[in-house]
Image 1 (tube, rainbow, N blue to C red):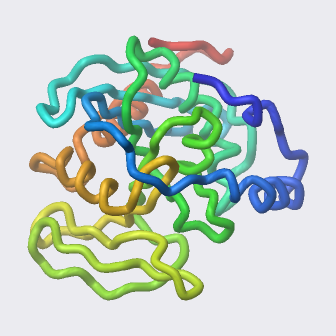
Image 2 (spheres, rainbow, N blue to C red):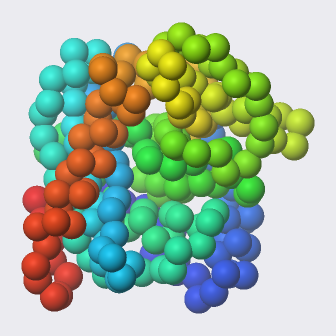
Length: 233
């Protein structure tokens, strides 16, 4: 799973923003066209200095949620932390971690925004377009937009509006816990995002494949001792 545009690397903030504006039209919102059988979650962690990044991917069967495989990659951070430009910091290692899985997932849950982004191209959309794979943005906090607080029960949802359009859902995955901010990444509909995300929720706030990737990225960070970048799998 590779994408030619992943080879582009901005030299500064202005170039990164201009690239996002130019690429946003490539995001496609459309039905999956298949019943997903493999769902992956991807997330990244950073060392204390913010110099190294640890990307992780976890693969599960769906809807059974049987764990199948995990993979991780450690590297140097290629871009500074700037809100709205997370993809330039995380996408390369997340793409590599996905590529190390034995099977291509049907859908990828990404820790971050999809189209609920100032330029409509958050990390979930960026990764989906670059790898030509359906992605769902699952964020713990809101980057843009506004919406009502969903009801207290599990599965309650409210539309997230930005510039007069629905760009996502405020979704409560567990009763009386903080909601998540869901948005289309690429090649999927918002309703499918909701169904698949809720279908991956067990007893935790985060859907299981994404929670697994989060824990794996943190474990890779703890276990890292080498001073030079290295791949872990």
